[in-house]
Length: 155
Image 1 (cartoon, rainbow, N blue to C red):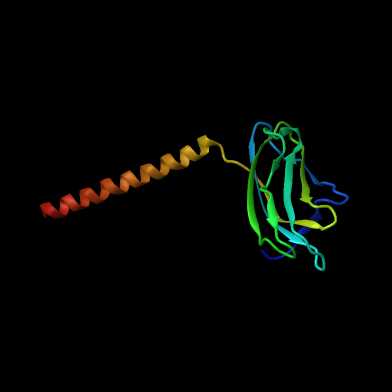
Image 2: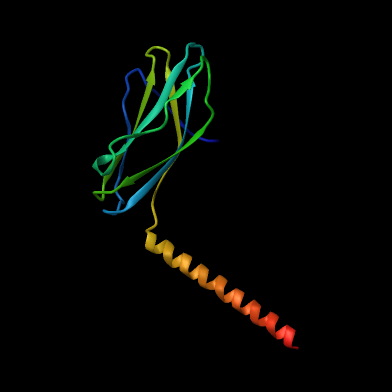
């Protein structure tokens, strides 16, 4: 992971990072991917726990999603981890929200966030068209090669 990231304290003056998403299609499923890590502020000690609680407006089918809780040893860094979550759009505009959560208070359980990406999940029928076309191409190639082989045997 390189580049920019956001660090949030999950136990002190906690507030969500939010972004209004205005280009959604009602009835579509969206995949949210991001990188995250657990860390502790330099100069402080003590084991901490960290996670992100993620939601997207009222369209979130199962309420809030969260990453796994990471148990971080004193003065540690987890390394970057990938997360993938799915959301269903009930409206053309939803609020995407990331809320840092951690323990204990006073040990700065920092959780980091980077490379957030939200995309529509292709419909199954679209995949079927591509799969069907791919299968037809493979079958055509197999038949063509068998004919060439059969002609070579006859000649």
